[in-house]
Amino acid sequence: MESFGVRLDRAVRERGPLCVGIDPHPELLARWGLADDVDGLERFARTVVDALGDRVAVIKPQSAFFERFGSQGLAILESTIRQLRERGSLVLLDVKRGDIGSTVRAYASAYLDPSSPVYVDAITASPFLGVGSLAPMFELAAEHGGGVFVLALTSNPEGASVQRARAADGRTVAQLVIDEIAQLNAGAQPLGSIGLVIGATVGETGCDLSRVNGPLLAPGLGAQGATAADLRAVFGPALPTVLPSYSREVLGAGPRPEALRAAADRAVSDCRGVLAMS
Image (cartoon, rainbow, N blue to C red; front, top):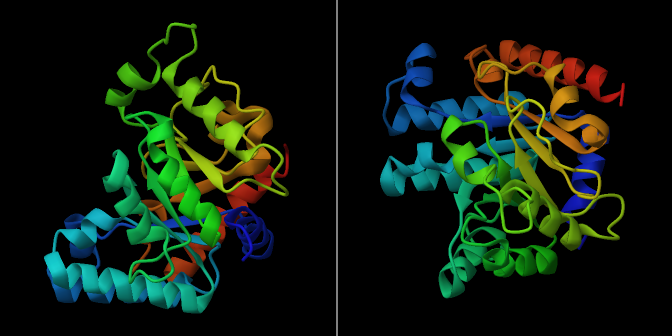
């Protein structure tokens, strides 16, 4: 099986550098004229899939907004993942899982084993129990051609107290995470399968991203305040491996499918222009 890094590289070249979230929070459902219930969730997700599934490189469902409806919401999430895969998008499930031992192995099996009903191309993960605690995820991802995006520098203000704290050797916690992921991706071509999550609103990071050799997911673009131009300050020479991520900026254009497609096309154009300057 091809690695996630290979498939991602091809998807971005064919469809453009863009990840779009599926974040059906109550306010957005209301904006679309949908009820905040299972039917509204299903209609919202289906509309996004039909509009963008065959043209966006990566689509990122936010698991929590499906989980809040219990088993019915999870059934819609399973269906959404299946439909996206049928349309050719890579599916990055935003679950931010992290634990130790048998529990993290269970999370890995849930999302990265092809026999699972919620099997996806990649997931997000939290490393703050130690990057090494995520080893079962990395191992299963490698076995089945999956990917893992590990949190490093997030856009929320509370994150800085942990992520920018200094370890005994003087490196920030974020840099420690970055360096460990770089080791996992060493030698991969054209791109490693273990990525990092670095918010587009964090400004100059003070971190060395030069050896990551993996995809850098950049959430926070659009409605959260960052522009495509801000990516230069955040990522510098690492721009070629950035995967820009939009949610509300694109989803807010709905519910008309043609408006969603136009918003996604604008985002691709904006990001392609910045990334081409790297």
